Image 1 (cartoon, rainbow, N blue to C red):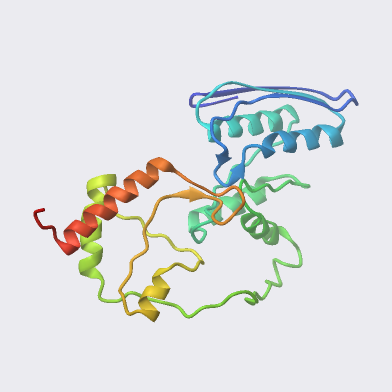
Image 2 (image 1 turned 180 degrees about the horizontal axis):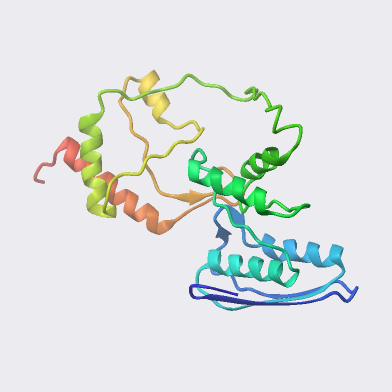
Length: 240
């Protein structure tokens, strides 16, 4: 099963003897929001409950995401299971095209079906509710019971955003992407408590505040350069 440079092979025997031999050397600890260490546990659980002998080999592939995808796709094909891949972001609201692809997959898929999310239960829950006889006609009412805080909005920020956009383009190329998600950032404290106009920008990472949280070092280097250029542009520089 190929995908660009990745190539995987799966051999399965319905032997009644649960066994897993898996040779997939992932080059990354995370695949999107999915911990690569759990891949072996996932297939071990499948082999144990299905009572099959399962051999999985990633023959080649540098991209961990592609290696996992070809492995998953190959296992599904060996079991004569149709595999649908629908991409929904965990950081942004579902797009119209993404929801349309989800509905098309549900219409085409045979029942029963298995839903799996690579890094969280939110999108799996959304998809499951779409096909649930009760929930599809009785949408749940969501009430926040955890931490709530007063919102903060930076106004009259065109000049600051333009200066940062210039710095961002110099390091990354292109325009600054917008991010929409539910979270609390330090900009709220600076803006509301100290009357300091604030923008939020930083390095990229995975599993924020989780036990396996990490920051991408290359992203940290780039974000530091962009921040330094913004400071120089916004505050000005003086000769030493």
